[in-house]
Image (cartoon, rainbow, N blue to C red; front, side, top):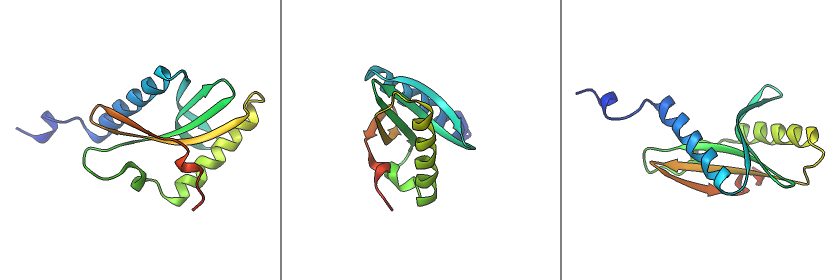
Amino acid sequence: MPSSAWAPSPAAYGRRAERLAAWWLWLHGFRVRRNVHVGGRQVDLVGRRGRLLVICEVKARRHFEHPLEGIGAQQRRRLREAAEMLAERDPGVRQVRMDVIGVCGWRPRLYPGVLDWED
């Protein structure tokens, strides 16, 4: 039997991971928007809780590689630019954090603030 009968396609696996990550943020009190386009860039998830704005990149992994390995310097720069634009649009935002949610199987894991680091 073909392997596709046993496992979802990479795109389907990624969409499922985004839904799971959005649900996880919602459970932790965030209002969540998925696939937000700003300044020609797409952000996987944007969460808002009070005055905190969270820009979140979702990385789905089927194997044992770390989710942060899939985020290069150029992607970090683009996410920072998108975060700045989103924060400028919303005068109620006082804090911006850029996170990664890694999803392996059904287990989301939050890496808070890791994209705030400079390269």
